[in-house]
Image 1 (cartoon, rainbow over the protein chains, first blue to last red):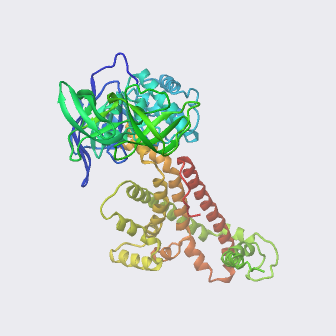
Image 2: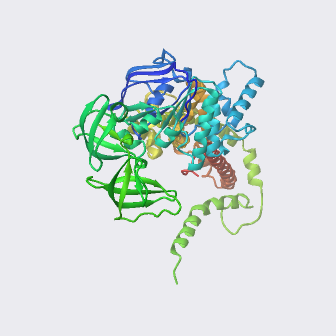
Image 3: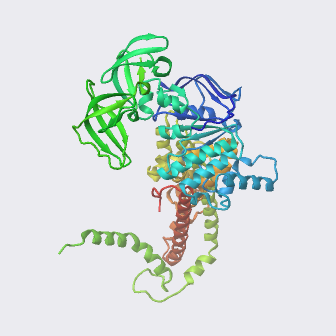
Amino acid sequence: MSEKPTMPKQTMIEFKDVHKYYGDYHALRGITATIRAGEFFSLLGPSGCGKTTLLRTIAGFEGISKGVVLIDGKDVADVPANRRPTNMVFQSYAIFPHLTVAENVGFGLRKDPRSAADKAKAVEDSLAMVGLAGYGKRAAHALSGGQRQRVALARALILKPKVLLLDEPLSALDKKLRENMQVELIKLQRQVGITFILVTHDQEEALVMSDRIAVMFEGQIAQLADPETLYRLPKTRAVANFIGTMNFLPGKILSSAGGRVQVEAAGFGRFEMDEEGQVTGEPTATGATVGFRPETLTLLFEGQQATDRECMATVEEVVYYGDMTYYDVRLDGAPEASRLSMRNVFGRPVLDIGTRTRVGWSPGAMVMFR
Amino acid sequence: MKIPSLRIYTIAYLVFLYTPIVILPIFAFNNATVIAFPLRGFTTEWFVAVWNDAELHGALINSLIVAGSTSVLSTAFGVFAARASTRYSFPGKGPLMGLIMLPMVLPEMIMAMALLVVLLSLGVKLSLFTVILGHVLVCTPFSVAILTSAFQSLDKSLEEAAYDLGEGPVSTFRLVILPLVLPGIISSMLITFTISLDEFIISNFLKSGEELLSTYIYSKLRFPKYVPNIMALGTILVVISITLLALAEFFRRRGLAKTGAKDSGGFV
């Protein structure tokens, strides 16, 4: 995680009960959240969840129907997009195809009172920052996808905005390039110290890059937390499912005392949990559920001892990935199979379907949804 | 053996379509006043006669005035309509755009008569101006069609990017939108110019005394001794038209290449 030793804690953006209607369609349903100055913040959610709409309300491309948006403490309701202290990197990059790279990057400096030479210097510096030094004279329409992305970044950052908005900036790149750009963006953000707000539907990308993430479903923020909390203690089963994979088995809270809860779960039996660190969510009609990530279960081979607890299970499905193997195993007494991931080690066999096996697990890795 | 019927059909079709146009230059250079084979000999005297025809000069100047004004006006209207239809949605947009495009398919005869009746009942005197009005009416749909494709290939986020970088609506139009649709505008002006130049029906109905190129040609065709001159003039017009349309297509394609858009077919 990109924990910074001295992360500024001042508020940069504040949403207060923000609503947005498109005709009858309720796109944003009461967004209340705070984005801190200097943090890398992500809006994560499936398509149509309102994340892009929310980003565009910051940029000023969308008005809001109700509520308040504050940028650096200032209500921006009456501030048009061209006078907001924000700049955007568009999903399509929106590079002006009729201009050169340098003209694109310097586009926002037109009203800048500096001399032409100073501006040219600023453009060159900005291009160097994104690794495109010397590309200024090239025609913008002849650039590759990754280069356009960098030009878009340079063009936005040259104006030294308070907030940089990134609308799915990596979705058009291939996997390798995307992973490289993720790291570069993190470095760039640390270097310039500007608040970055990223919209993405890729949970992995959000986990890798963000200081904090707001997971959005249907126009609402389902959970706002740092990546580790989101992964380890998701507030709802929907969030748990969106961030990685989580297994669910029916469970019960038996008793609670002194911050510890006694629980019982199908396949695992009775065990104890930390109430604050492991019990989450609101009570639902379907009853309590125990959740656990695939990597928290371990297959125990001949002679291996469980580090904590163990139970018996049957292998129902095997998916081989090279470095990993995913097993769907049904714990004895569980109503359905659970997914388990094992790092493949040389010399260790991949089990066949139908094999009976011991499974190691730990109460500390469980999550209880009330 | 399989008979290449489609190929034969295609060749026959092209021969039927283009023979008259090929005949034009052949007789324009033929050394005889009668349009008939066999050809007698090569001459450029008809072109010289056309060059020295003062009446033709007047008609040509009138036609250039009309075609020039028509191309500017209909392209200006086309810009407004294309921008409105591609960027904004408003009630009645579909029917409205349909009405704008209608003159493309309405019989020109009907429009010419209707315009004549309306103009006369309004007490407007027929002149080159009334011809321009009529031409703008038939040319605007072509402008709208060409410019709509130019505006459609504009990514909306380009405009937003310009706002985002501090520009207002006017400077955004000037710095981003205009340069990107300029090839479409030039293409529209060239095509409407060409259409106006050889338009006959509306010109004939709405002109007053002064002749236009098309009406002049028609009036002279009745006299056999002028026919070779007309052939020469026709040859010149064909060359001009093809040149203008090729130019228009060149600009249209360049515009697409500039914005990186896919070619979705043009007029040529």
